[in-house]
Image (cartoon, rainbow, N blue to C red; front, side, top):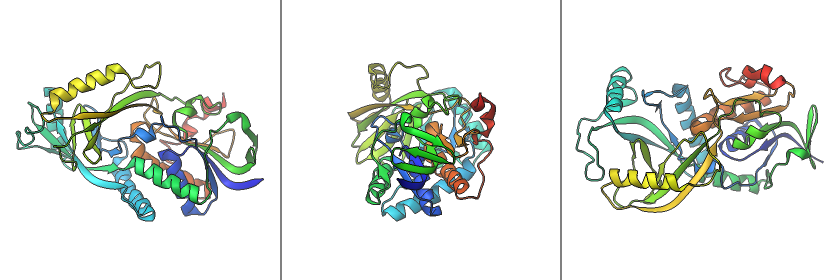
Length: 352
């Protein structure tokens, strides 16, 4: 029987960061992941944006999350000998008068992230727009695909990854031990995204799964040093390829790319772009969002060693390193979980 301190289910952003921090604490672990090609982490754009929504308000906890994320991705990138994060800006073209007015109002109130663009015609060689633009800065762009691939290779090299699908029927709970086939662990942490919404131990948490779709588009003439946004976003992905999206569908019948999204996004590009483009991929994924837009972090009130790091939604690149660190510290016998994220807030629901 192999014994470890922690069994991590899932190697998306949450599972990758949790295993990273466990390395730092010295706790032993195994990650179980079947490399699901439809997982949300594998299709993430990687953008950390300090403002959100139509009112351009600061993202929740962003003043703490951004500097923490910058240091964490720099440290992991240094360890893996690759660059995982860059600082960038979002050029936000106003799609309507209401968004223009919201940006002007917020830039006056919150100048640390927002600047109104003075040269209205600066980008009209590449784009069609009528109402000007503003700048959101600083933003960070995370190389999510590179992170997941390089960290997975590291896990395989050190024998810390089991490439298989987790089967709940094989989990035997004998507190304080959690046994899965030939593996015994003091803790089991579910970092498996949308799958946790059907987990019998955590399915009562208020998940709000939503489907997102995007395109990868080759555009030769637009520089890849900046993100461009007009309702939807053009985000640098690889050489001359941009990530284009994304959609939010709260009601959906499957997790597959749809013809409707493809048509509407092509129309958006034809109206916005003044340069040639070529669609090279169309993808879809289901995001593990939550009703209150706060992550699920912490341990089940009935099973002391059974935890979850999930519900990160579209903010996974900023939330995952921060809350994975808190969870690792708890298992190392120190630290606390932010009460706004701790699943203790759902104690009564989980005990029903």
